Image 1 (cartoon, rainbow over the protein chains, first blue to last red):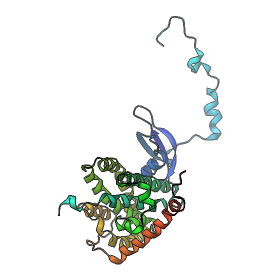
Image 2: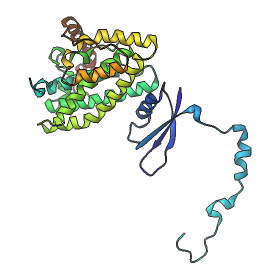
Image 3: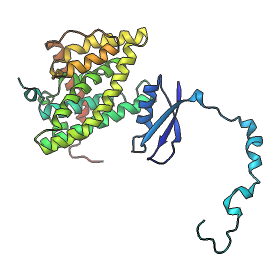
Image 4: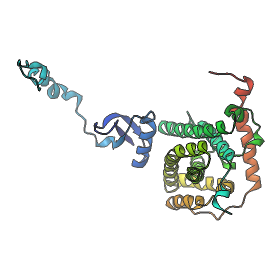
Length: 89
Length: 222
């Protein structure tokens, strides 16, 4: 079965998805993830998650889900001018 | 006989790690899965590093690895045993890992600084190798009818080669895994001269290949 692999590079950071591996059970999934994705000291922590546990968005929904966010410039901090005199922002 | 006096020589461990490393590299590109391909390559490189640490302490590592005659190697017989199928490779690995576990733990207190340093690093590497071989032996022994049949066959073939691995603690460590794998644990082994002679022959063949390039082009670098 297929497993998704998440690596935390060091304490304080979040786990980030790095790829997927095949393994017949959770124990082997952890070993394979370690062997394939942490050979060069990339990890302080590992997660493996059955790929079937992932709920993915439907590409056909992309317009509805994501396009409305494209024209909301006011959601970006760069939209706002910082008033003179503000030093602790 | 004290525990210390039963430990192998530095040369025996260096040679064992070197030949076992070479055997594992024979899987690379041909392992059951791509993931296992990388896993076996990682383990082989760890073993090679351990071998180099010890060989370079004993002399010129290239000279010892590439220009020494097969009959002068001092490895435990099983380290040169052919890979066979994946079950046999993993069982051989478990036997070797459990042996090295005893060796590295003892050598973490070795009087020689270099040996102690190699052992201190190897303890962690070996703990992972043993975890991997244990998980596979359990998975295969307690798996399908076919995987169990293959593991039982491997045990029958390899067990007679384990006499020189059986340091204090080795049999207990191996027994724990075999019990978990629901595999019957064989009686203590007497050295099997015929099986060990076959490993000596396998070592000659292994070295004929491993040493051929260095001997054809002495001093070559890349």
